[in-house]
Image 1 (cartoon, rainbow, N blue to C red):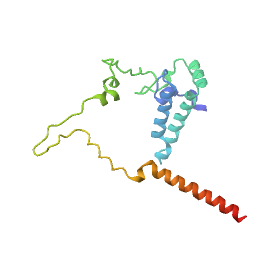
Image 2: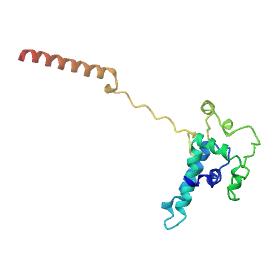
Image 3: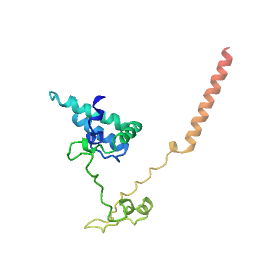
Image 4: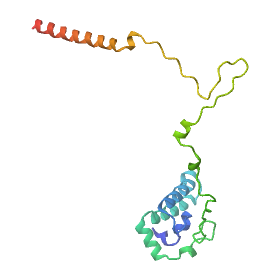
Length: 174
């Protein structure tokens, strides 16, 4: 890796020195997708750009190599080109929220939603039943013999009789 010391890996990946490993990984993936040589056929510098991106990732992906680089290059910003994503650029900090309330506190809980009164609309012309938000419950089907427990008991008794008959026939046949 001869080119490791010539370029600042932070500037190559476009992250600050205080970037977390997740930010470094995301920056590497974003740049690898953008500059992969398979996407730029015929470009002579695509392989070189990808090599620099992979070298920067190799240094910054391992905590030991990253710490070693930071110790040996305390101010490597002067090696980076003075562009928008150079390491000397101050990181952009998001503004603090104007309110401490978040979207989650504005939502009603499930219990509050269930306890809310149902909206009843006034019946219109020729409509005898007021409409609600929910459809009416369907009428239950009339119970039949098949739905009762007696049907299951009758089937179980029939199976026991058949098994007993099979056992008796099996003993007689021996």
